[in-house]
Structure formats: structure tokens, C-alpha cells
Length: 120
Image 1 (tube, rainbow, N blue to C red):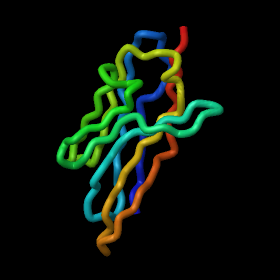
Image 2: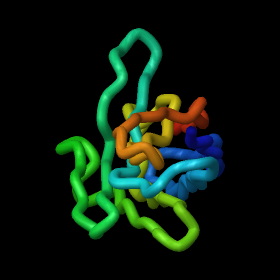
Image 3: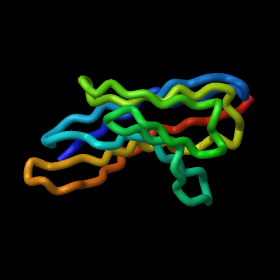
Image 4: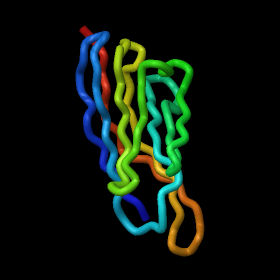
């Protein structure tokens, strides 16, 4: 089983920046994909960005050019650099991991989330 510890959320004015971090720990063979989802009040959870163990990235259209995802495989940590933040980016951001167990099965896990609020 994997545990995900997120950090880096907070309050930032429009146009500002934040960097989210998520460290994975626990008992697993390897982590395939890590990433971030977000959920704003009254809205469904949506994909923000993902990155594979090989470094391939995927972004939601709404964050392309503003957000950058990166990953340190040695530390099992994923980062999300968020620039030019907009009020519509306000949401709870949850870390995501797709991993393989020692028994060869694939599992998914989401962290508890960190609040990002963009407001003046």
C-alpha cells in the first residue's frame, strides 16, 4: 500500500505562483504514474497533470503553458509548479499515484489533498 503526503498549498493573489509537492512512501514495487487532480466546490474532480516514470507528461488544456509537472523517481516525489494562477484555479489539489504491488497487481491511490486559493 502507498501513502501520499502533499504540501505546498496556500493563498496566493492572481498572477502568483505556488509549488506543490507529493511524496510517496509505503510498500510497493514501483510507481508508474504520478500526478495531480483538483476539485473545486460544486464541481467534479478533474485531471490537472500526470507524469510517467519515463517522464512523459499530460496536462489539462486549462493549465497548459502555466503549470509544469516534474518528478524525482529516486525520491518517489512529484512536483507541480503553478504559475500565473487564476481565481478559477482555486480548488483542493490531490496527488495521484498508479503503482504496482509486489504481487504484480496495479493499484491507484489519491492523497487527501491540499487547498489552493487564488484571491486578492
